[in-house]
Image 1 (cartoon, rainbow over the protein chains, first blue to last red):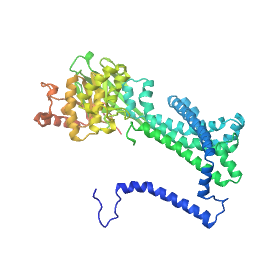
Image 2 (tube, rainbow over the protein chains, first blue to last red):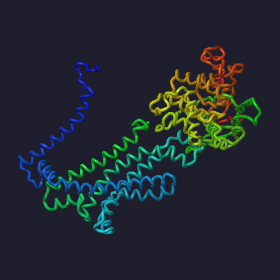
Image 3 (cartoon, rainbow over the protein chains, first blue to last red):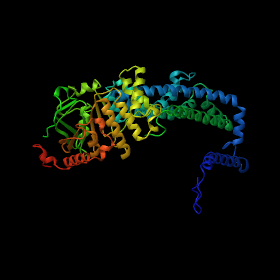
Length: 270
Length: 282
């Protein structure tokens, strides 16, 4: 309450600090937007190079139904991919944690998957599953989600403390009991972190995969179509929608993480 | 070697250790953690293992618990192999770290061994209630471990160790991380609890007053290789009941005499003079 000594730089009250934390990024955003608008409308940067924020928002409003439909298509692909990829990641990681052989067998595959730019598979998958199928995109989102979930889950399975393992041995717990009582709950925070990382990757992959053919209608294909037909402001409006979609995925998985861990060990690792 | 005096016939001993060796293979070579250990612990007896770091006191306790296996010699718990005794849940165990599962409430942590061994939920609830009452944590049943102090967590761990009413309690420096005041309070509680349950206790510590206050016999160990240097019987509780060990005891003359006796045993004999195998050329 006291602690403001004269002569030294005055410290902010917690309330000012909280306000500042919200206000500062908004101020930065507004300044950037203002500078952007200034560059376009006063300095006269060509609309082809850089559409003004105002024109992007105008397009966003004008094409809102189409943007919403496109977001739903891409979002559905990303969500399905995220769910399937996460389930596969958790399943394979639990097998790898249980049997060393599976670990040895899966390690090179996962390493390969982690290195390969997965969207590079898009043209191949599009021709495999036909040009009118969303399956290729969903498969790409699933593959992209799989890697971080697998790696984090496997690490989580290896986080059990020696004292807990000793305890389980002292209780003569069988391996199923150890899994249920100790290994799985220990791994949960790591699994959730993996899913949170995967959520952004799923959106990015589902979206970028649309650049390589397949059915129209998603955000990715509309961005490339708009850009190709010189409707730059509209292309940016779709980009804006993509950012929103990515944020929604990230925040949803972050909320899931908070929700599940709230009852567990209070926030930090102990 | 020092001969541990069995106070009851061997067949009924809580723990019987005969010529036990333990050698750890490490990258830098073999480490003799324990060498020719002989020790018999009677049912209901409170034994402390004391000695400097590296004397193998924790290792000995882990062998009794069947968390590790001896390299040589025989070790029985209630007349069975250590492994069988572990499978039969003949002992309760507590470590220096409380080792509570952070995602379980206090009550669920205490209930864990009962749950694992298929005790019905109604009986589980009443056992847990009784145990938490015994360690004075009834009001904290629904808290999570990270909401408790270190001393309270350790009390939960002791309640958990007692959950299945074991006849043998193994404790590896359970109060090691606590401050002196909490520690003394916990010791008094442990004396009361062990008198109530009548369990034999193997208590690993490096505190001389702690060992003296708690024990019927103090086993003094020496390091490299881990050996039993001397077994010092405590005359404190000889005629009196164990429950009669109260705070006053800490200020009695006999208490200080015993502390001195254990200290001399710890510092007196060097490991080299204690046995024919003690010749070290390194």
